[in-house]
Every structure is written in C-alpha cells, then in structure tokens.
Amino acid sequence: MATPHISAAPGEFADTVLLPGDPLRAEHIARTHLDGARQVTAVRNALGFTGSFKGMPVSVLGTGMGIPSASLYCNELVTEYDVTRLVRVGSCGALQDHVAIRDVILAAGACTDSQVNRARYDGLDFAAIADFGLLRAASDAAAAHGIAVHVGNVHSADLFYDPRESLVATMSGMGVLGIEMEAAGIYGVAAEHGVRALAVLTVSDHLLTGEQTSSDERQSTFGEMVTIALEGLVIDA
Ligand code: HPA
Image 1 (cartoon, rainbow, N blue to C red):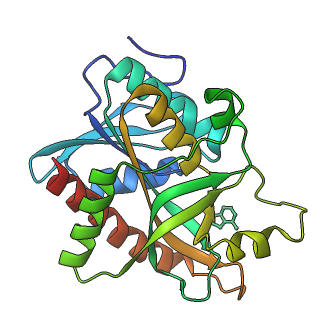
Image 2 (tube, helix red, strand yellow):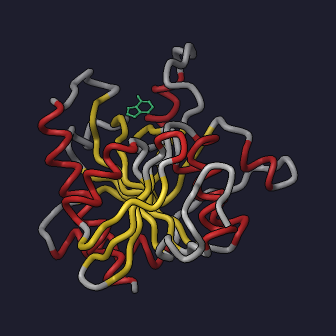
C-alpha cells in the first residue's frame, strides 16, 4: 500500500535501495547506473526509481536533507516495502587533514547531536554503526577498483549552520572523519527494524581548509562513489 510519503505500489521497490539526499541525483543514478530503470514514486518530488545493476534489482530514492526527512523515508521503505539494505550515497565535509576533497568515506559509525537514537534507546547513547557485511563489501569493491577509502566515524549534524565555535575542533579531535546530516538517523532506523545500512560519502568540502569541489568534480566523484556502492552490494548479495 502507498505510504504518506511514497506512492509506489507494493513490490515496486527492490529490497536494496540507494539513498541520495537530492531527488535529481536519484534520477541521475537511475538513468546512468541502472538498467531498465523506471520511476515508482514522486510524492513531494522525492523521486524513486527501480531498475537493476548486473542483474541485481536495485531502487534509488531521494531522501531530502537531514535526519527527520531521511528517517521517515527509510522507515516507510522498511516497514511497507520490505527493504532490507539501505545504502546512503551522499556528500560530506572533511574534518581531518589526511582526508582530502573528493575522497570517499565509508561511515563505520555515525555520531550525532540529534536525539532520535536516544528516543529509540531509552535516553541512552546508542552507537549507530554500519552493517559490517555491507561495509566490508564496499571496502572490497573500492579496493578492486583501485579507489582508496577512509573507514571510520562521521558526524550527522542537525544544524548545517551550527553556531558552536568549538564543534569542529571537538569532532576533529575525536578522530571523526567527516560531517553530513543523515547517516546516524538511517543507522538508527536500520537497528530499530533489524535491517542493514551503510553510508558511502564523497568529500565535497573541507572544514579545516575551506576548500570546495566544483559542481563538475562533484558529479564525477559522485559517480565513482555510486559505482563502489553498487559493486559492494553485488559482492554482498
Ligand atoms: N555540514 C553538514 N553537512 C555537510 C557539510 C557540512 O559542513 N558539508 C557537506 N555536507
């Protein structure tokens, strides 16, 4: 049955869904990386498509920005469309000197200032982590393509424009690799419902140096990252 935010019919989503924040990225991924992709939902312009990659059924859905938006789509995918593998593909800001613009980060864990996982975990600190099988498969896929990845913690921020001046130093000092706005929420949904999740991120800007990628660079590195994510999913399947 359609949900409040997804109009696809039952069975129109594959059990594996790539999750970019930007719905137009979802369309681009579907058209350039999937075979036989067709649109299955467009409620509020959150575009969703289903096709296949190397014979493996895959869907892609734009989640919008931030934990609340990403979480509600993931929740509905899992509870109403029987999705079992949630893979965010997105961008992040780098928080370490050894992480460069255009690098790929596999988010083994996701810290956050959001309260969503405390709500799920009786007010305590839940360690929001990636599924190890998905993480290992993505790492293997990257190695097979000769693409170096960083594996570690990211921070999923509630505020893009955070006024706390010490925050970047705190995150960097704790070894957090990058900052984005969805992974901890997606990992929380996955834990709550017993499904598997991973976030694969490209570095679009650097919070220590102020560097930024051009939109052309973002497009090509994004494509490389989607390939890693899809090849990893084939290895894991
Ligand atoms: N903050 C949050 N999300 C981001 C950033 C950032 O600085 N850069 C890319 N995604």
